[in-house]
Length: 271
Image 1: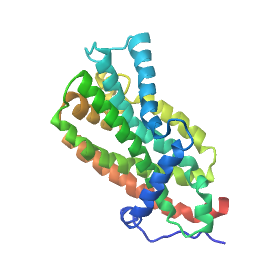
Image 2: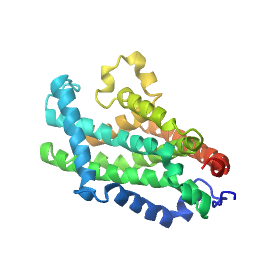
Image 3: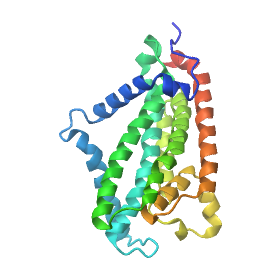
Image 4: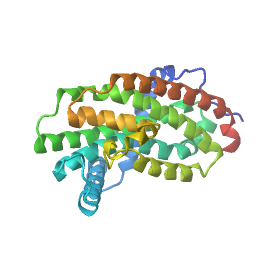
């Protein structure tokens, strides 16, 4: 029996047409992640706080890392947290993507289902964790530093193309993961490497200028630097860089969708 999935949708029309189903699956995904745990949804707050404490202790106390003259460890923690918030969206989605279609195998092979929306679901789920983390960051900033700059309102503008980019990558990785089951192991190594190749635990200024252009070959670098500009420094993002990144994100989004639609015809043969 062939795979019966809804086709004919485009990369944007899939989001609009199936928005109710996407939101339903997203809600279920979030609740399932914390279902049965003692703290429930509070883990969405506790987890980033615990990681923040660990990273801050290791880098500011053990390694005595400095951030461009910032001596206050609490301010260091907020700078570190803002970078982690951005990176964790990519990390959450891409590490789940290789096994995503396999996890929903019954949807793919037995029912009429728009399987192309699954990467959108996990992207929105990661966005939920980002929003919770942002509220934690905002509370900490207001208590330790004061009212953040009005430039914080640029945050949704920065996040939109970033989410398109992450979803495009998820379409690529999730479709390949159907055919190469150990892809998840490779993705885990790559994500860990990107964590340290992105200026999260250190400022970009700590890298010799000659290497800056290579750091920006990592697309997450631009987003991390831009988020810090509006969240920490109170500056507008680089609009020229924003235009370039938006164009790149749209390209990845559309290419990832087209790749997924082409390869999904073979899903039923290996599931």
